[in-house]
Amino acid sequence: MTFTGFFQGLFGADLGWFLATLALILLIAFPVMVGVAFAVYADRKIWAAMQLRRGPNVVGPFGLLQTFADAAKLFLQETIIPSGASRAVFLLAPMITFVLALVVWAVMPFDAGVVLADLNVGLLYVFAVSSMGVYGIIMSGWASNSKYAFLGGLRSAAQMVSYEVSMGFILVAVMMYAQSLNLSDIVMSQKGNVLGILNGNIFNPLLFPMAIMFFITALAETNRPPFDLPEAEAELVAGYQVEYSSMAFALFFLGEYANILFMCALIPVLFLGGWLPPVDWAPLYWIPGWIWFLAKLFFMFFVFAWVKATVPRYRYDQLMRIGWKVFLPLSLFWVVVVSGWLMFTGHFDTIPA
Image (cartoon, rainbow, N blue to C red):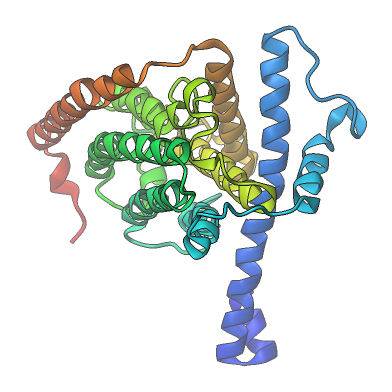
């Protein structure tokens, strides 16, 4: 009996389906929120280690509860709304950012068959939801009635739109190679696709450049250093978040780190074989797929933190030049290369009817 079938047997078809879906949503949302808390802790610890500091080490054993203490402090603070702000839009913006950061996890496959919504157009869903994330940032910058926040919102909007174009072409190349928009199918298409023994598109010379570009694009999409220009402290104080406090600010923070974790999960799904082991060798499949998936997610998060601790921030003109003059023509050219190679080798002849 399936999980949904169990609930339907207890509560009837309609109510059972609703309760089963709600339970599955909570099974994803709660670990993601806990993961965000520990991701912030891990981020700070990695930066501290690379800068020869200790990092959080006071609240809880090894400082593990520091993020929860920070969250409690934010929760107990007063929410201050600027007198000239558009109140409804001001409060709606962080909610949109937070909700979009959670709903995108609905199509993420954690293991074979372990996915909330196994959509045939899962990759298109991811791209659509991530594209909507810019609305929360623009709304917060405009509704704050502050020039600092407005400039920060415009910066972030321009940055996200610029790099989403390149990201779209990269996803097209992956989709063509996998012959599917379903994320689970994309993972399975990577099984033994290099020399018959290596699992992962990153080992494929045809898609390796796309993997590198996607990683850099993911940094820009999530406003991570060296592309954290929307939150540049020197000139914009804190960008579009400057007028926010208490839980409104916390929602932006949670949404940002949930997006970072999602990108750290999406990169393994697209290029590192998802829940598959790196090598197509039978004993490695004894390890559950979700453990491989989480190990790859943690590795990508470490790389994200590593980049933040070591790479200096770009100037804004450099950021936009890379997006429009380097990544856009390069990703478009590589889509032509990938499609030409697949056509030449007869790869499309295997498309199922």
